[in-house]
Amino acid sequence: MSIISTRIDGLELRLATEADVPAILSFIQQLADYEKLSDQVVATEQKLRDTLFADNPYAEVVLANYQGKDVGFALFFHNYSTFLAKPGIYLEDLFVEPACRGVGVGKALITYLAKLAVERDCGRLEWSVLDWNQPAIDFYQSLGAVMLHDWRINRVTGATLTQMAELFPA
Image (cartoon, rainbow, N blue to C red; front, top):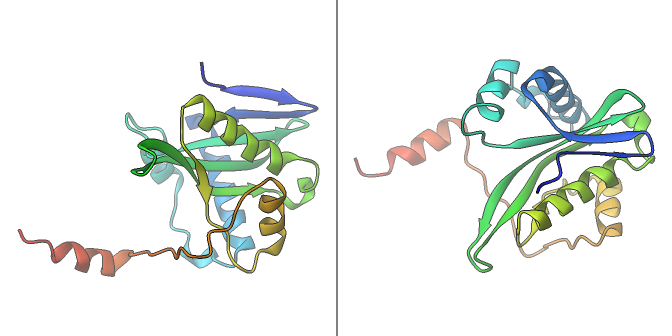
């Protein structure tokens, strides 16, 4: 049986429901602001409902509630390792409000995902971190994470994605 909700010293972690969409969007916007990427956020409450809470959701969200207030989130989805022949969990976003950093919320969120990965028989938990975000890098490494310096992220979006799709013979 998978963990759904847990309480630790005034902190509650739980899987988000559709009613949490406004909080999720707020955390996305706060994360984008922190990363100086606010101009790239096109997410709306409706888009989040359509992609996170439809019949076949694309991702899941864990919310952190500390002393009665939502203070952070982790958005994740399953990927797959051909080498391990197992699913994995990819952490897309982790954010904790600045006032609650240093009290264990981030650690609780990421270890919750590690436990979920083990319960779901995943072979790995992975994520990306911006190279300038040294506090996050130090935090992740303190938990045992290993930076993969030989790998580079590739991304295709927008018009370039459409152009690439048009290269497929019809």
